[in-house]
Length: 93
Image (tube, rainbow, N blue to C red; front, side):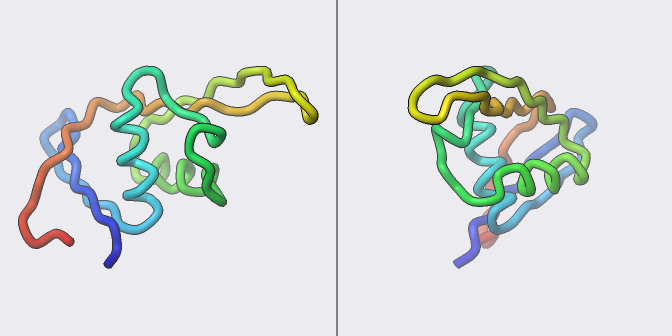
């Protein structure tokens, strides 16, 4: 079964996403204004899923944060900036 999510945008239009884009969007919605990092929710190709959501018109910001440890550097924190409402739809599974 493929994960699906339907959202209502500020202009009232509806969009439906499936698969990894749905999975990513669901995590972004649940994270709220804090956003999330790939450290919080490891998955391959996060940047590609975010890219595809952006191409669909969603505004997702990326802030960069430093991290320490054996491999110090920076990582991105993604935040969904577009106000969306998740719309439950029967039979969407």
